[in-house]
Image (cartoon, rainbow, N blue to C red; front, side, top):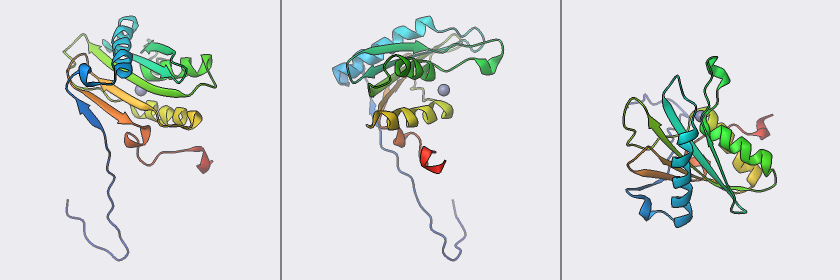
Length: 168
Ligand SMILES: [Zn+2]
């Protein structure tokens, strides 16, 4: 895009680093297992409206894995994404244990999901604060029902210009 040059204007870039794997076998074994659990978690999804079943699995620093899924509601905003269901459940049960990684996957009743799904903006915002609370980067592992896997080492690569408590 051609941007007209004005005095003192600086054009800047945000660069996001992430890794794409073609196959689960290429992942770190612990991450492959987390992804497998996220796939299983899609089976408990309650998505009668969107027919889009999302599963998530969170691995804590103590090795415990918490699974969750999206839960919809006839009053649409009352439902919640799989990522937030799972991250909140993990932090409610283990408030002092850092979150190492989250894996998410999806299946649709309408079509084959063969590319990685990414968390929505609201879930990314929750991931930012989860990471801050944990005091370490959280790995985000994304896949569809099949196909490639995207891995982000830390939420900042998924969520530039984060809103954090220092602004409050
Ligand atoms: Zn979300």
